Length: 201
Image 1 (cartoon, rainbow, N blue to C red):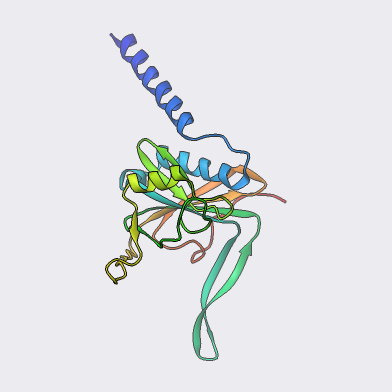
Image 2: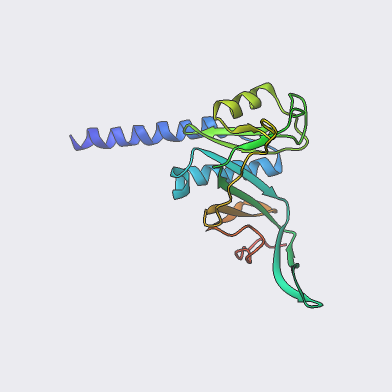
């Protein structure tokens, strides 16, 4: 009996791993490789994965840290530090819809997210300004009920901002994308010091 249970658990583990590999394709693109690594870890190991069904993925090519400083009596956000050796991937549950204009048509660039992956039935999407919007991408966004007209009956849609909502930030070493750290926070990336990574030169 025990051996049967062990075999069943091993089978479930193997099929789950196979499914994960199926949904997360391999990529030679630098940023996309980091995106897939982050999504894989997020789906397998982050509790935030269970809280939403649609996730926005954002890429910051260079990590920055800003601080609130007073200049001539006025408080301003000023760039304090720049970390050129760190790539940041942000994953946040999308609870508002994406507003779009009529010019967001198939073939357009930068109007709507143009890349996506579905993991365990949940949608992860991101923008690639060099990649055009496809019919498939548009269909997926509609299927997950992500879109809303920017102007409907002469009114702009309302967008809610939840400052308490937490997201996952992944900090990757650019010279070794297998080295990364995950931070769970309600702050936007750049408004706190990034974690220390031993990236080397």
